[in-house]
Length: 516
Image 1 (cartoon, rainbow, N blue to C red):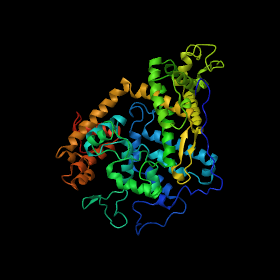
Image 2: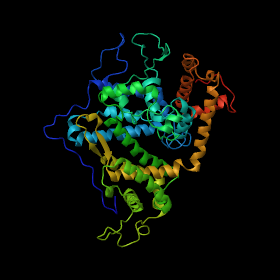
Image 3: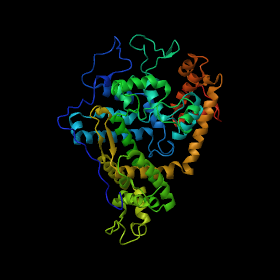
Image 4: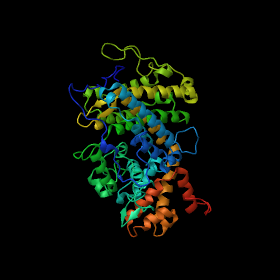
């Protein structure tokens, strides 16, 4: 938004007349890595789709259950009001489904080729399943520990959990062997939940391999922080996903429409519901956001402008303008409905004609601002209105007529800017605050010390029997051992990670009763 005037809206491209487009889903989508059925399997179920089966497998998995013990914004033990990774994932799934329903209703191609809402919901529920304990700080610490063995990153771990770590099937079990064998003849036989290729594609946000060591990252221009992508160990799997979903000639950079919808829904949830938690937690108020010093606002403007240029490079430069003036206009559009904000009058040149930009735009009191933070009715109304506004702003940006599954969707640029402003404000005020950093720093130290203890010669014996057996199946393989330790720690909840630390390194007396 420039000086209170709306930017150009996203176009909704029409299908060329006479063009017959391929269907959105095909036989390759529902294929599975292990497609051989057991003799004891029931006949195919006519009452539910393969994607609905994947949805059920996810819901019933231990990795999904553990999301309730992983922090979203605030530590889980702080207050049962604040969101955790599971409640966040449920909200992302609901928003993603709403977006899919909207596109199915309003776009001519998707009206007759519906985006599968089970698949979109699955992506929303699964998108954070690879996050380790203690959020991004835990992610960075695990990455440091295995940087020379392929690195660690939350999205890569999501794919690894779903396709390898969860305990449902192996390449022989249950269709041929009666006993599961995770490792045979030095090969990894685990198949995770054995999901369809299209479901796995729906969570593949970054279709690129993570550099396998620090030198490779430097050559690739990557920073030392976790690199988004997938692990080298999943190279062959990702190639199969691409082939089954998009075709043989797609070699990298694949992102399905379901994945794109999930990605937008995640940003919407982050920018609204995390902000609601920040209000409730006393980290922010609308007044503190609006009255922020210009220097702090300029830092946010720079970050948001960079994101605009990355995601809307196809738009002309004047539509991508974003300065302090546009930033303040964005805040007015966000808070005008709840804070009695009076928009300024403009002259013919688009300049403020009546009052100074900062002094007379806003007419409110601290009480009004605090009411939004302290009154649940006001908070709910505010976030609900924002979510609805952002969902309505999602549209088809590019319909890929050759491969409809790779069609692109995005927010209108005004909505994108609002989402990015709120995300950045929440990040700066909450995640970077000293109040939260103390908890995060402790979590990082806990993970580091657990990892160091487990990687010692016999340290892995502190792990549960199934993890010990996994390491012993490939003796002397340092990379395999480090990855197994990393997988084990990454699967811990925040509370269990601290408890495990206390049992092996802390002040708590060791217990033989506590299950792993």
